[in-house]
Image (cartoon, chains in turn purple, orange):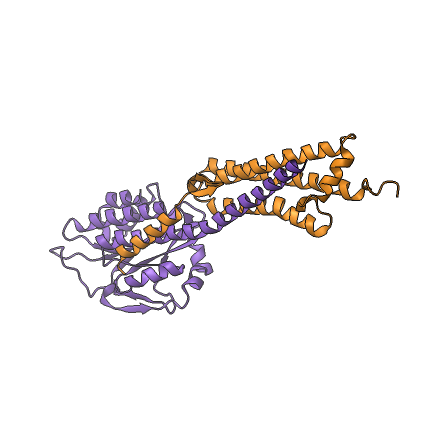
Length: 243
Length: 157
């Protein structure tokens, strides 16, 4: 009987050991997901900045690791920033110029503006930010943003005289498969190679685009009908960019 | 630090984090930990349930009951000790810890897992809860039977 009881006691210890191992593993998984988010944001920045270094700002995050790594991006001039946060999955949102006390350096339209984010954590968890973010797979976010931005940019720079895409903001809207895309254009010149740096880029705000349908085409048609200056844009390329 | 260097640092950290988890010397990839962890936990609990049920059976055997009761009563295992503290410790180690650990792991891996992995993980965690609860009840019954009834040395006094 003693051997029997010893075995039972040993199994009891085994149960505790297994449970403790699982618990420790669960605790370590937290930092693991942070690394994934950090890496995704770094790659996003790297990918975008290598193609269009003037368009995108550095990537900031709420986590200390990322903040530290993001510090090397401070001197990158840009008009748009992407913030990634980590809750369950990754959230992506576009930081706006009215961020109070930020640390962003921006040379949009040739003017250097410095935003100092007093507390990025507070900003990221603010109701305004939260309402504009949607939990999405980070790689999918990146794919969509890159696809849209690259194709739109290619479409607007390949021919002379076209308005040139200056920057783009993409916001994913919570609880819907929609995105808000804000495009900033500069008027094209005769050569198509020089930009009018004095003029304010025109903001083309496109709200609630279905990421997979042709809503963007309809929206663009309406804008063309209204005689907007960017009507020469390649409509097809724009919609492809969002597909 | 350049972005490339920073990426290299994160990659290195991720690789370090990707080391397989070890259960009793068996290395399990992290990707399947959400299923394997509750499965191993459940296996250990079933093994313990089998032993406890056999112990209960022996304690109810009229021929061996008295001798076994003395042995069980004096054996140094917290699950058989009388008193609230030992009962709480037993409940914590058999019920609370495994369930909390598995739930927390599921919670952490929820978004990284596929739907089938989530479903299987949730079912296994519920099974862990059921097995743990049953085990606790059985051990409490045994404990009560050992300490509430008069022992063989007390009979006739």
